[in-house]
Length: 331
Length: 302
Image (cartoon, rainbow over all chains, first blue to last red; front, side, top):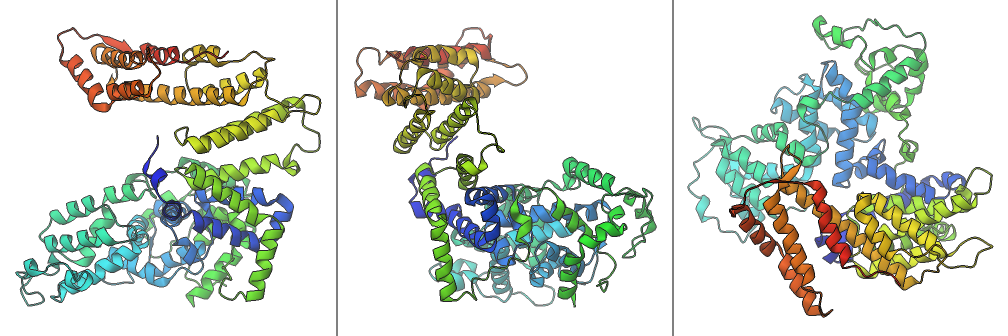
């Protein structure tokens, strides 16, 4: 059925809201980069392939970070790609460090900034012991809100800091709002005072923020639900709850529910098919336990899709390029 | 290159991912950082020239105009479809070598006409009318031997395909097709073609909405709705359409509209549901009556 408001929008607004020009412009850049393709297949075919790949969400693979974060659709597509590529990590129960997750991210986006991965890891680890191991799903859901709502979370961090230091963020960010009502806030930072900020005050600030934020925000009703449940909370406490909230995940729409994270029969089938093509594959591959994973985790690894690919040299040679990219960024 | 800590089977995963038949050129975009910053003015100029020469500029302008005209809900999918159709049209992408037969050509023309017709919703009348004209032109440009023009056979075929792809039950649309069809050898003027297309699209949407309404009324698991409520809906509809019987003045459209407005329809349904008549189930089949009411108002061609 129709959503009629788009018919009444001014042209430019309609195009901007759906990022039509972003993609058209990118299509032209891609075309200029791949001129030899168009002499072979024709321009219409090139554009058809481009826009189809945008629809399918595969257009962000191996693209530069500035493009990956350019639109909400690109961000959701990247999250989906990351999940689909590396969900076997979660399936095997492997725990990785922040740096290792960053390597995975860079396999899909070579210039992915370390800062974002760090911020996501802080959500999981509550800003503590940053070299700890994290499970795939914990990292994925934290990374999801950090990456998708990046600008929103930056503003939230600023608000939180202001509240913590006793400033009223509303007076800083929106000079017109009256601030008298916030004065009775208890003094913070003293011994015996619980950490964090008062939830209801925090919510008022976030409500205000969502109103005027031009980037994506999580649904306000869900934020309210989270903040209504507590008296006080810390910044990372808030982000942790946000990342684990199934409603927020659904509203964002990039990933399945946590319970279904490891389910992807179509992908499994395809991997099985690929594995069947690799000659001389020994099913009972003995994987060297890495990362100090307890041996009890080994059984599910046998027959896991990527593990056997680890060994035949034939497959290895193809991935050299990506490994080198990762190496450079690591050192 | 093995300086990384051991746990990077992911590199292989990525290789697998790269080789997945995604059916897109995305994989070939590897390392294509956008060189926009370092581009010199001369290079920009030559790129603009290039784009103009190979026709990209013109092609994109036309595509953008179509997007703005149709205002699709999902413009990116719309564009993919748009360029797909354009690719089909160009001779380089025809059959592999052998010249396409008359039948295939006919199918391609029908496909293109359908594509034009679906570009804009019929309520956007200007865009819809433009697209109807485009579809008419597509269909009229026939083979070498025949004279240009649209014959009744093609027109009927198009109507049948529209209804089939609109997921309307055959027995529901058959009476409509009988009314607005032309004879196979007749020439179909644009005005008749336009009226036929419009009627067909309106009926399809009407049937879809009626089905949606029925689904709302349907008792879960029973596949049947409460007869009292269902009958009230049909009666309201009949009353509203019957009101326009006498004169084709704008006033009767307004009256029909107000009788079918959500509030009066809800009122009628509410009255029926609280009425004293015993309840009995109403099957989805009886929904056909709604379509029949609609079709009764359609003037036959000729």
